Image (cartoon, rainbow over all chains, first blue to last red):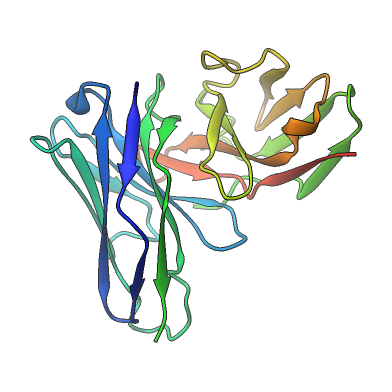
Length: 123
Length: 112
């Protein structure tokens, strides 16, 4: 069965970066794109970006362009999402649960989700 | 990218039907049949309920149905059950940026 297993929770200081991994199994990894979605505490879902796992092409939401890097390792069937914390903010605006999600039939729906990774930003 | 517009909350009694709306623009909901709906229970990952406006993934109850008219998509849940109480999010492909996705703000469904 399709499974996406993400790395564990992490705590970071403002100005640091964090890299979340997503281990895929149960399907041909290179045949489906991988999206990343975040959810701040008590808030809604926010699309961050996407990677074509087959050829490595990426596309990012304008909000995250330049701050987020999405990548993959096809030999390890893992996807990655790295966020550089906002240096200009002393709040915890990047504190959120980060999800990876495998695309579905249309390519723009998210058929399978990881369990989520809580990243806490705190000074 | 502006979020799609959903009502903050809806409610209904067991057995009743409810509809959740999702309003966008011609650049997203109105321009493409790539609207999806997700159910999220507290502390859980979202679950795909509807894709491509009207299609249900395998295993999703036929009590859930989707539709679209113009720039507004809708999710209808018939025969409400207690376990349907959750947050529901719509999403759509958007052409700005290309190959982008935008979500609605979410709707809390309360089963009375």
